[in-house]
Image 1: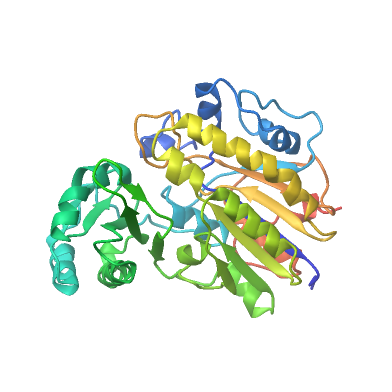
Image 2: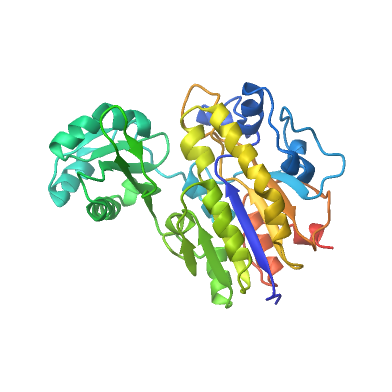
Amino acid sequence: MQLNRKVIIIVLDSVGVGELPDAGHYGDSGSNTLGNCSRAVGGLKMPNLEQMGLGRLTEIQGVPPADNPTACYGKMTELSPGKDTTTGHWEIAGIVLDRPFPVFPGGFPPEIIEPFKQNIGRDILGNKAASGTAIIDELGAIHMQTGSPIIYTSADSVFQIAAHEDVVPLEELYRMCRTARELLTGKYAVGRVIARPFIGSPGSFKRTANRHDYSLIPPRPTVLNLLLDNGLTVAAVGKIKDIFAGQGISSSAHINGNMDGVDKTLALMREDFSGLIFTNLVDFDQLYGHRNDPRGYAGALEEFDRRVPEIMSALRPADVLILTADHGCDPTTAGTDHSREYVPLLVAGPGIKKGVDLGIRTGFSDVAASVARLFGLSFDTGEEFVTAVAQ
């Protein structure tokens, strides 16, 4: 087993690279988060990701295909049905779902809402599908007057609870989320219950970084569990711990934005341990994709690109970097929800060949199989690409 190694997976949340063949079934025909975003802003400036080979995955204005990519490059098909965060990350870690998580576009039924209200001792507002910022603008003032939390969902499998931090203390909001998580089982087992605290006054509400996700426990062990069971470290950065309900995680670092996520990833890369660093950078999705803001999305992409040289310089001789995503969230489409897309796969490191075309992978779980292989282990889901890229 190779112990003197770190594998760093950075999930650029929602940075899809074009519609999957079944995108039409999800209402996502024509979606291409990177490509459409680049065209909407007149071109992206991402010289470091361009050099790695990102421009070979889809047509990105301003990011042409590199002649001699410095990374191995490809894109991955999602095998699991759905296009949500939990599904994407679980598949990256080796779980392929056979059915999607349930969604509730018309709101949650009385058999969920009534016991929820009884348990929390409060009435509720909302209970509909909505944009998070829009529903806070709509109902925030009433919430402040009544103390009733705002319940909403989206096209994704989520039960979200928004509350003003001065009206509902954070710990009480988190207790509400735990109550909802206990109720949402069986046919109501949504992928995530999400605390959405906010501050401010009517007309100027702002969500805070105190968000917390309560995911289902994965139905079976992931590659994260495999690494832990073999004495390796699994360090989570961002919402990774929440997505996996803490399963297979050694330590977790909360972050406040993408750049803080990069900073904390770099700090872990410099620590003395062997294992996996699993990072989620959520700003692309949360701040820009869902808000149909291609200009903001482009700025976040270019900001991350500027940090790529630091990440590459921090790699030790045996370390491997994997850049990917969990789904799309095209900011140029009429809707505000995730999109069913291919995700990028860029693999680099001192011991990794340059310019290997990894093609179209038949599942995100190829990452799980490859992580296991990098540590001399085997995982029963996915096709490893280590053999093709190792020098």
